[in-house]
Length: 135
Image 1 (cartoon, rainbow, N blue to C red):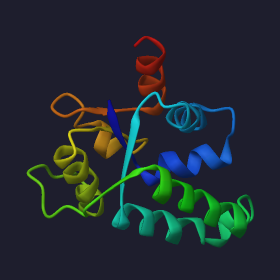
Image 2 (image 1 turned 45 degrees about the vertical axis):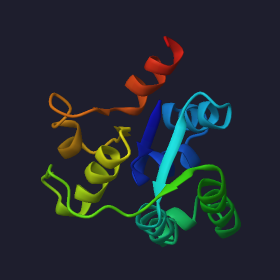
Image 3 (image 1 turned 90 degrees about the vertical axis):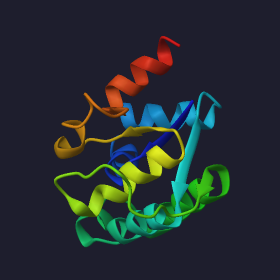
Image 4 (image 1 turned 45 degrees about the horizontal axis):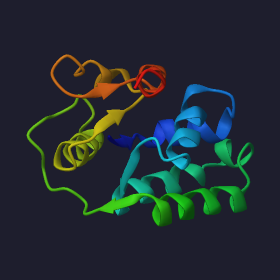
């Protein structure tokens, strides 16, 4: 199985080590699924991790190390062109296209993306962890 993790899931994994997003990272590192990233996704994550409100909780060295781990151990796919699906937030359309192009589940905490879950393989972090546990 392949998964694209929305940057909000990746950030949550760093902020809450006992939560479902952190469990996803642990299971990825344990080889339970393939993590798909793109340079665009990693750039968005790097920008967000540099915000002062996050920097207070996630030291710069930890943020850099985490992004490097994702780049080295994840599957780095090409940044997608426009996809066939659109979200309420056009800035997230690349996540839909990346997941679609890579035949991956999109794991997100964004409600506007989760609203598309009836038609697309989009799951919450908890649902994805439960799926891994029951696989």
